[in-house]
Length: 301
Image (cartoon, rainbow, N blue to C red; front, side, top):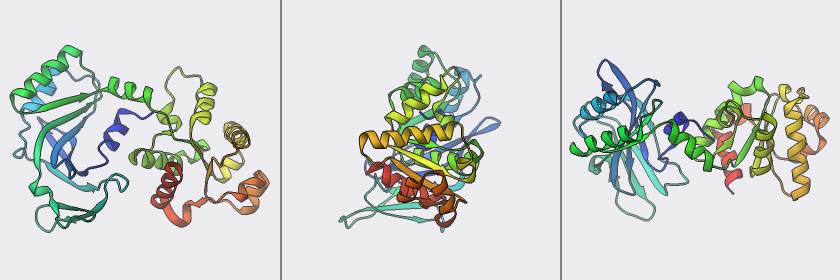
């Protein structure tokens, strides 16, 4: 369901993530250092844009990376482990060198990133593809210098997408895409909650109606972005609402998770009286982060 970029942004959510950039010749590559407090190991992943890269570029990239010695440029951003996957406490100290400390529940000791050793694992998320033989060469060269290379290209993303079933369908008017729908989709993906969202789920050549109907049938929940745009749209959003409402009746389950954005109770009632019986989340009042957190809880319960 997600793109390669989305996988790079959301993989390894059980770890603490230090966002950095990796020098590579005359350019810098976006990268992250991951600290796995459970496995007591650290590793690196990078995202390489551009679809015309050849094997030589990646050989140079891994040859200049020496764990613990390569000078990485900090972006100033840290992503902490997912609360669902890490049971304990995290604290960040950036008075001098950045240090992240973790303590598991009921464990008296704290674990510091300064005590965690590198595993030698290096994940390369690449928009360019390499032939299988070229990947083998890359991995062999990595082993010579103590690196365990995992090369993840567009083929990797496509293979994963085929086996992932979305847990929530996001129904929205296209005019609300930038402000609400996309942020919700990205936040849920980051919490390892795959969603059916048109930008992630539709590709060239797909039959629109079949893909939408499949998503509506398979998803555990349907997120409705209720806005003036949505309520005035008599096209796809109305069709999607009718489909999920019918499914609720058929399965006798509560499937709808509404987000309210600049709409009144009267307007929602005029659209569908039954929607007033469903507790919604007010985007303006509680904000993006809290809306996504509550959506996640409702989907995963």
